[in-house]
Length: 182
Length: 168
Image 1: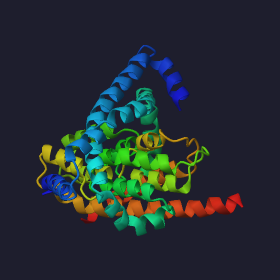
Image 2: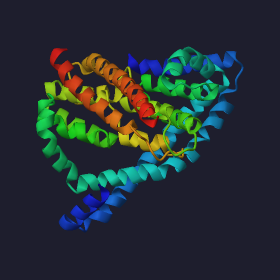
Image 3: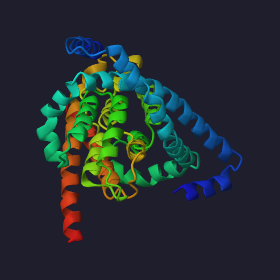
Image 4: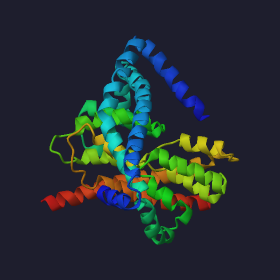
């Protein structure tokens, strides 16, 4: 894909290639700076959640769900996944990321291939189960909508559909891959 | 309403920490310190994926794809005005929010198109970005079926979104 777009650009506007790349890199840098600030707040909060023992309680609460979905038996990992899921549900995608990365590190078995649990976590995050699409509502209000929040119900229904579909598909693929492996 | 949820959660957390006799300040500082190494670790991955996406868009390949896919999307019930949004969404968060804003301005925030666009954005994620960042700190190289499954889900999410907006 990259080679194709590069060759197409050489054909159409060769002088723009470097500009585009550097521009994107500086966007990435600006985003990283912003993320650094966001993560500082959330990792700080997370530390309090963890030290106060609240994360253990949350993990215990979500344990049946996590066990069913991920088939793991490790308290630390369960804790990170529980926090990642709760942050997602609250619509805090950026707060979910550092916890997701921590969970990923613990799920990694070093084989270079994604384990079923890793795939499940990626798909769950990629289908974004969330209760309040805050950014979208804010944008709609800014654009002069009469009732900016009336998309909550359809969004909720749609996100529940995609999330459950994701879970079902991952489970299905797992089985299929296992059978093919044998 | 939603503006109060987070502050209330924070107050609750700080009170809980006080009861448990946890040093809020020390813990917060300790956690916040981890943010810089984390961002330094994931920056190269963010930069690479964003450069790749910028090149794809600048070359016009995404526009070409949008054109060639449009009959399929129309058959699935996704209006042609939203095809670019659906295609762009897995790649870029800021880009798709900018596009959403354009749609609001062009069609009015309360139109059917705008409502569909809102729901599509609300029930999907920047799949490639999320995947890149999440596996950046692991040794995983082969993702097997993770990305296809996520893409299928988000396409079906878009179809459901357009259906729901017609009813609700």
